[in-house]
Length: 274
Image 1: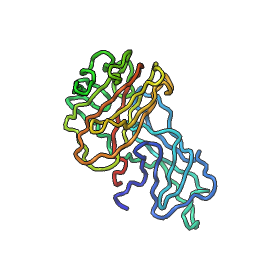
Image 2: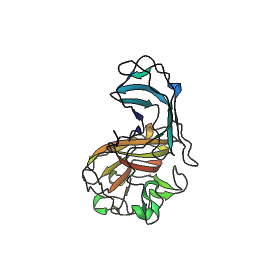
Image 3: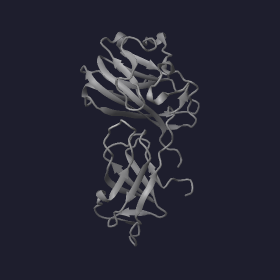
Image 4: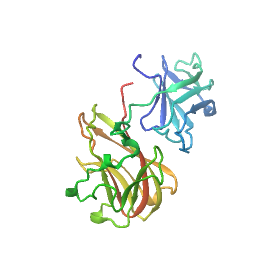
């Protein structure tokens, strides 16, 4: 189909779909070492490259499952498939052709990867773009304030991140950050993948980070900070439905006492029709 990308990375980065012009099948064991994925992390980012762990067939698609998610902020990705024994046409009359260095298309675009007043919202480069806290909800005032700051101490992308360093948790909320809408609205009804990366230095038992929206306060993506691997960047993700024109007033919150950095916020539609 002309409007379908031949090679497509899932919105959550955990699998790749390869589209063929006829039904395909997996017959026997797949030598995944003959399927290679390459991409570049941004300068200064040291994350393990994803590798293919298993392959399945769905109609005209091969689905390549990965051992770790490809970061949404990774550089251009390419895929090569030299496995010829187990990957065949569904009628078992021919092997699938080799693929060499095909571009891996991403699903949708990060809504927060935009330039607002000279700053990228996704990488937390400017606190003034995240300053509309509402005291009626019991949230902290705009940063910087006790428990929350924009900092260059650590960053996954760009030069800064948000640092939550909470020693008290007034009203049970911890430190909270609310993004001003800046005219950011959902342009297409659908289900969206929502993720961010955290770097935990310390956390008391039961402390957590979560992200939610003010329409229902239900966490979309969250993590118990005392169970997260310490001193490394870890992805937190979830998904929810949005209707067209929904205003993206996004709340990041830490409940309990912890020192945790947050960076690389990503919101993208799961099915972009391609």
